[in-house]
Image (cartoon, rainbow, N blue to C red; front, side, top):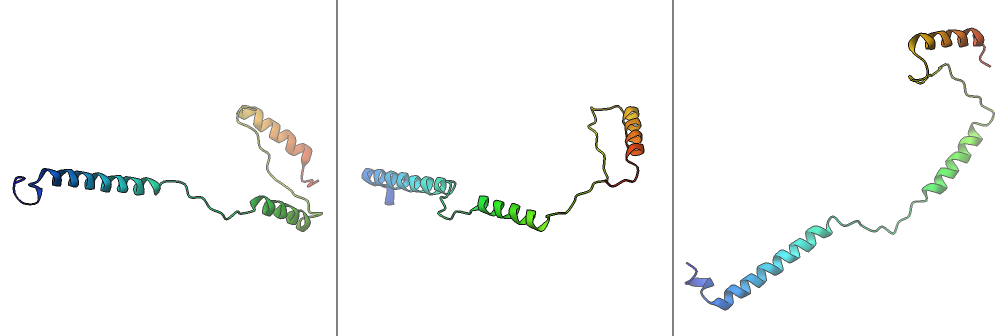
Length: 99
């Protein structure tokens, strides 16, 4: 099969090997460059927007008071009975006073 037709001359095999090597090298370079990080020249000034959001929030919420109706304990802070006793004590102290 290899002695007749396209692959009969030895220099053809060398040319074919070089061609295949070049083709595989090019495919390898192209496929690995697809995973390289792209460099973008566009900068997003997120820190400036964060500062603006903070200032805007302070202005919009000036004078408002936050309230909460939850009391949280860490699980390691009290066992169940001690936590219930502490909550009952705090509820009696606080009552319904929002201040």
